[in-house]
Length: 248
Image (cartoon, rainbow, N blue to C red):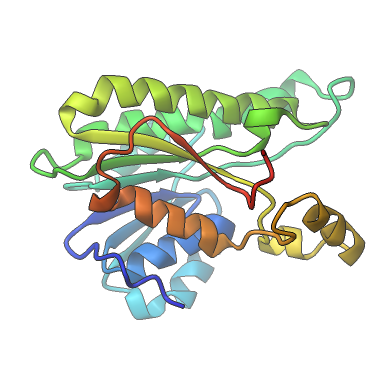
């Protein structure tokens, strides 16, 4: 089913990490709903692949190579944005190790992209939002592990928990300026990387979820569409868990 129930014609969205995995699905969903979408991604080859796959939306899609861990890269890329309505902070990496084996370099690498990257992008884009828009949306991807911790992910959990904290702060600071700021906490989601895991691992993951199924990227994209819509105008500072009940 295509996500065409929401109408984002004449809206401009930016999706970081928008060329692969969940980010690609978010990009595609906003395109299908009529938005002009700027997709930022670190990997140029991945961007080219996304452009090819989404060629039917060539007039709406703008792809740009950006390193969100570097404020200068975000600031330079943001110069091409005009009248932004929706920002989806999705870009993220993992560098998993147990705490005993995690180096300061591995910790900082994830913080730089998954936490500082959200700050860098939002800071660089804040003045690019349309002043006349009554629908200014900041949506940042956190994770269910930010809510309960996870073995081997000190860096990732710290970053994703930080995203929730920043989201709440922005909701307070920017609400009077016409913004809403919300986070989404995906659970086990069937991205290409997850789908490539052995079947027994996938079955174990599914057994932990009350609905006995993994999420699909479109489930996260649908949550983004909703939080970006006028129907969600009074939702601000919340973290929406899209996890099949995993954190119950």
